[in-house]
Image (tube, rainbow, N blue to C red; front, side):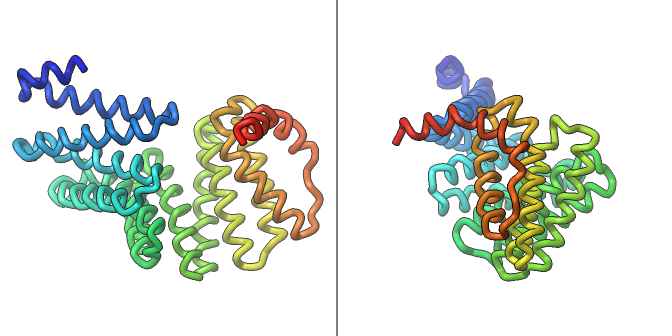
Length: 289
């Protein structure tokens, strides 16, 4: 509110501060689950950056692209997929323009924007377009990771995860498995060096690989991958249950379903402390119903 008042009197001086404050506010709202408030703040931030970029594109086009990318995420979380796609496409277009002139500065942002765009396209059933954007994102991250692996291997793994899903959606199951295997290999290496940072990501890649294996009829191998997903997330989940409960429930559900279908015995020693830690969350859900 203070920056809003200051910007009313001295827009040139304080509009950038207002836009930054609105972006930060949207992030805080989102973390609290107040997604409509997050969307309102994010939309206003994008509007302010649109105004600033109109007058000073060299200074504010990158901020506008970032704001549009953030806006697309908030719109998607509220099920407004058409609007999310439009914002994401605008962000990718801006980063394409920026990366053309300054590739060293903006190719990473373009890769990230294309990765996000592929997800929004997939949400709307545009599978071929999603695959094309996903391939472009993975190619850019691969190129970036060749020169700076520490900085860009995580992005490459994320893009490969998404690419696996897009390939699977189009029935390209062997290619989907190959992409997921590469993501697992990257994240396994990252997690060996920095487990606190990358074990949750590794768990996600195991889960994606499980989907690809099941699609190929390799059910027992899919169960093994699900087991690895639960195992990888167990430590982070038991340390911070609230932060990882949703993901753990997702991975557990697939592990239990596939193990039952394949008649594979469950790892009771692994499951016991996890199920105990999940009890408060299950009770909350039960009360809410």
